[in-house]
Image 1 (cartoon, rainbow, N blue to C red):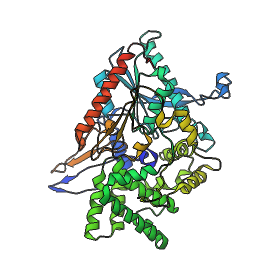
Image 2: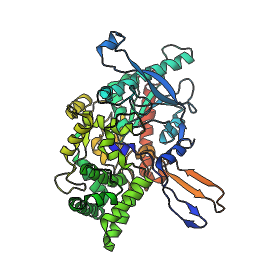
Image 3: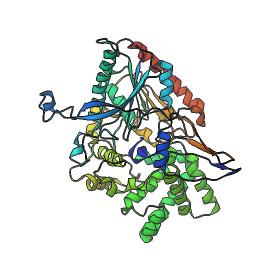
Image 4: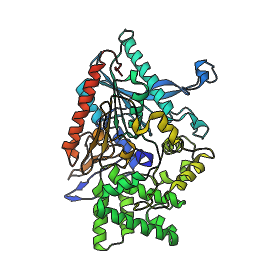
Length: 515
């Protein structure tokens, strides 16, 4: 994701406040911090908005016939960063935005690659998300044009339009720069699928944690959480799950209040919230933040539920910035356009295309057994109405799943990431695959660094001893030195660079690959 709810967390904030020789931790509104950080030039390469007139339905026969009533368009937001662009023949890196608002081109490892290759970077916001919504409300009827297939065609049309725009500026016709596509998580899957479906429009693609396999009952997700946790931490998490399940039967209201989640009236929503809180530590490379206090509490004979509740409130909700509201089905039913719209939008894609139902395995599960297939199907029906069902088999037939038959695609995955089982992990000559093995290598580690978060923000806030000013120091997420095993990350990055260099050279001057 990011994926699912985890991919839409607002911010990650790892910070220390030093006041006159002592340390005092505090929690600030994640929305406030995100707004502050998003204006900082160190985090974004650019936040300057541009707009493109996009076709609403690329597959309607009426569009082909140019029937005015069906040839509808909407404004789609995009960004461009040209500081490193070697005019006029440098490559163009198309960074795909995924299942959340796209507020700019973030300063991650792609910026390093752009500088190395003299590339322009352009990024197109995914239809419906952020400011690129075709409609004024997100009713189920209005969401019928929200799909990966439509999004891929958006990218193809935009790519052609942007190339033609460059040619007009240079007073050229038919010129082609070399394009390369990048994406992480769901956008990583889009990156691979774009190369599969439009090989003539890109020299290659990088699918970082690219979840190309739609999965109905994704039991491997929970199994990976257990593997990443290790035997000792896994056992504590399982004990907490048993204690919570029992407490729900006798002390439901007080238990939910203990976790700051009283608003989650549906037990499945509450249990999903608790399960995700554990997942996030492994998915985004912060396992010690979860396991260390839990294991120590177990050894000390402390109240494990209370210790886990503290972790959830302090780290998952506080530091990491997750909103409990995200798990509330009443919130997901809200059709208004607002900052929380992406939750409903992604669940629509889950409930129609890819599923990724994170259900409990039949045995040795970490999450509650009450998080099952029925819970997910009931959610889809409750939120979107009758007739909404994930066509997983059709999605995998259309794209190929992990048997995707594209070429010139690099797949990368973190060893701790539970999403890696929906990605391609077996190399082939035309589609190399790399697993980054290190203590905190998670989702999108190759592009974001580690430990990191969905938005890859790591801030260290220092207040001077005179209390006269606050200094915010940004650690750019692309820095592999933040990882416990930077050599592992750098080795994979070097392999990525070799493939990008080779494939760009093979289609240099044409913008087309040999396929």
